[in-house]
Image (cartoon, rainbow, N blue to C red; front, side, top):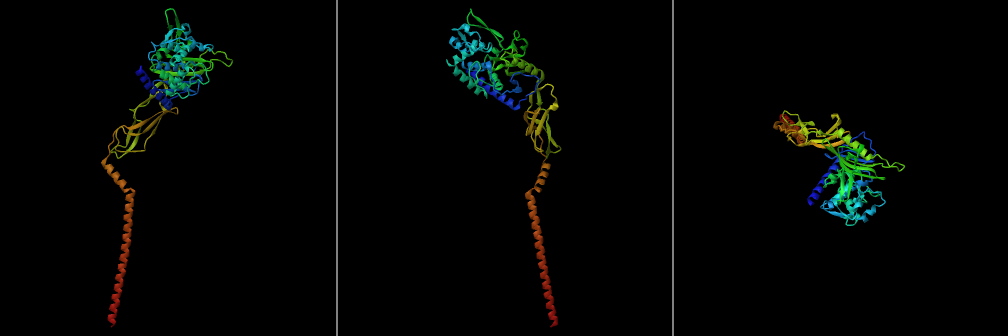
Length: 457
């Protein structure tokens, strides 16, 4: 059991990061499905990509979808749910008198012991508030409030940002709320726990405590009930949890699988009563959920938007012999959920690369990035790498080095100094020669004067 808890904890971390990543690279699409639910969150579980959302972070009343968290806390605190028994205390059940609660028939077995596993069936299939209260009282050691504190602690652990529980069953309380996104986190985690998917996909079973008493448990989720579901029935729905109060409206958390794809849909707040307080018979959460599943399975598919084997662009390269460019390819492929009829021109790829490269370049060197977008929504950013190795030409490198040296500031300064010194040398030489010439002229004049005097004497 400890190993299972450890594994579940690891999966929790993975799921939380998965959803977090959905919010950064979500591909939320427009749809012609008109939803009556006030808040909707729909995610593809194969990729973690959000495909539809509506007020998904708005605080909503969860009604009996609360029981998903009740299930989590129960399973994580009972080592053997199939052999651990709980006494059905009438005193505990009496707390629900006058609340209009949905019950699973446990009052018929008052005073008898029932397994935790049976109570979980009553909790999730029949949506029994009586089962929720008995489990909370048992695990809380006689304190339902202690159990509620455990629920809130678990919600924080799962990364829920706007969730607070006031009871284990979902009866209305102003301070009992969650969001569609938070419920998706809770639901995904619950799916990693023992028996959850099996119980939530059970259409009908019996609560049998002794040979004389047997009570039917029939699912409240009409999407999986082929016999009683009517138009709500959807063959690809795999299970989930319903919820309804006047304040919360119709709510449904569910999953569906078809054609290799699995989706989760959280629908909250479809009105269950009209302005006159009269019941609205149509369960809008179920209608919305079925329609969104049909839309997703019919219109969406996994597409590779950037392929590591296909060049994205090419870039000029210098100092390479007989080669002017290098092709850049994605460091890895990326696939995402997109409309089936999407045109390739709708996919926008923007590159961030240098203007040119200089050899040598090794195959696999990261050169830049490519950002892929669809309908103005960023899907991913991947590294662009060199598709081949390009060696450097020694001759071109020598010529380029010489060119750089000649054009370097130090070389220009050195040449300038040499030129200035040369000019100074010329000037000094001219001055020296000029003085030397004058000296010769002066000596010549003196010699002539001296000769003239001797002749006169």
